[in-house]
Length: 359
Ligand code: KG4
Ligand code: ZN
Image (cartoon, rainbow, N blue to C red; front, side, top):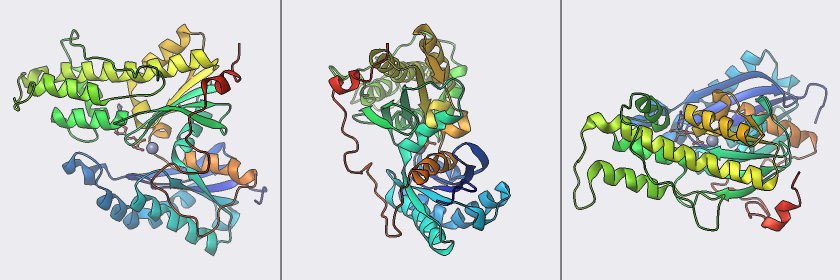
């Protein structure tokens, strides 16, 4: 790539945010524009894939133009384009990828396709207290995974949810309590009004798989508490108790996420721990991760909330380093709904990981 400017245009459309950003040398964010589709999906209580991809097509050109304008740069000054091509909703990914390929062709720029979760982890670049190696939790509406990160670029997945993503559990519990979509912020807000703090839901851990997650048991426990054990179907608790349910659910979900991340950090000898993805915008999660990390003598590196939720600065940031190391993707690069890339996704053996242990 033309190293002279180090300016990378990032494009992100893997789920329901259409985003573009210009970042210099993976470091200086010149613009970071995000168009959220929340209002379109709210009536359905979750992301409707067909609506998402159509909405991306309506705004993608304007969002990219706006990112370039706000950055105060000319397309000819760019050194390359980075775009999310996996994993995500296929129709949504294709919109951003097609835009990126077209611009790379027209502007004769190198293109690199970036992994969405690896981009999320790159947000730690802009947090206080990042020390390598670190453990990274990515918890969003579509994914919940734990990573061992030698540094910002060399990351390996060590755990993942076996059922719902954490954000999906927040969204489903919010729907059950009639709190609206997206559920995470709504649960957090309702929980602040809880009088009863005694209610407690079970925390599930998978036996022998301490870094994997499961949220279906917690979700069912909340459902039965609110609606009664089947065949009952209508609320068996007073809606005035809903804030207490929101708070108890939030505490359980946060503890399950934080304890796995901290256990992995301690066991593998990480020097810091980070959380990113939409759920990492949660205040209780941020408090508990910071407190727990401090107890272990580790740094908690928490990116600003707008860098935790879907955005394109994280794509441009990671993309810059991939381009600088010579990575190039051809103009017939495809999107993939799954996190495919040769050798990707296999959890390393404990022995292999312990070699990386720092004392
Ligand atoms: O990373 P993100 O913006 O998009 C995906 O890639 O999914 O994450 C969106 C998810 C939604 O499920 C939303 O309910 C959740 O993140 N979320 C939160 C909070 N803010 C957003 N969950 C808990 N607490 C929050 N404050
Ligand atoms: Zn995401």
